[in-house]
Image 1 (tube, rainbow, N blue to C red):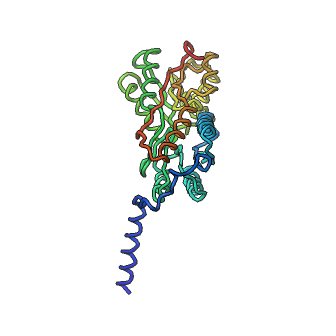
Image 2 (tube, rainbow, N blue to C red; image 1 turned 180 degrees about the horizontal axis):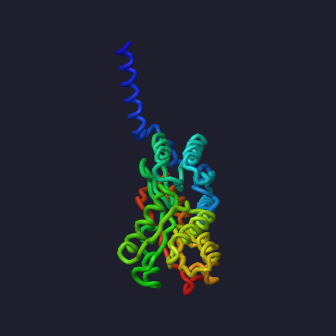
Length: 309
């Protein structure tokens, strides 16, 4: 009996090890000979409750339509477990390529590996996956964007200014990278008196900023990891009657309008529609057997009242 158990355990380990390997060429889906109209793209978005990711979806759909491809879109609603299930469902539906905007860069790794195990190529948008094989990441330079925000605050208010930081979803690569870039500048030139997560959400940005202002009455600026949190923070600041400079990240329409009105001070603007389009183009190249770069960067721009369009 004991020998039988050892044999079963050994076979199980072999099987699990095999699952982590790339499938043989004959087992991979044949997409090179497919017509574009027969290609199905699976797009998993972290949340469609954020205009930035709606724009990414729009870019994907526009480019896919121009190439005659079909797109199936699923919304994770900022729930990492739901996103894993969503991606598994897309795999079951027989998509030819997966475009994933991770809610959590670590948690999504299991879904990426599931796709790897049956040869479905994966492309990530805006945020990376910590593990698994990804053909390319289409994103802005989040770390550079964080530095741009820090440099702007120093230029406007001077060194030693007390600032707050509203962080994005814990575990998201964008949160890590934007925060790292900001601290590359802030740790040497500013006084970061408070930092808390507000999960990339406008309402949480408002509530979190209210709490920060109560405990830190001398804060003169806030950097929010996205525009939604920045807009919420501005509401809290306006209600308090304080004069606090607010810098966001993304460049969504609400933020740009707020800058025009003299409310938000600046945003590090991305090009979400372009991110979506470039992801589809990369997916098309991969399906045709072409090589793509590991990182496809999309330029950033610091938008202020002086240059907002």
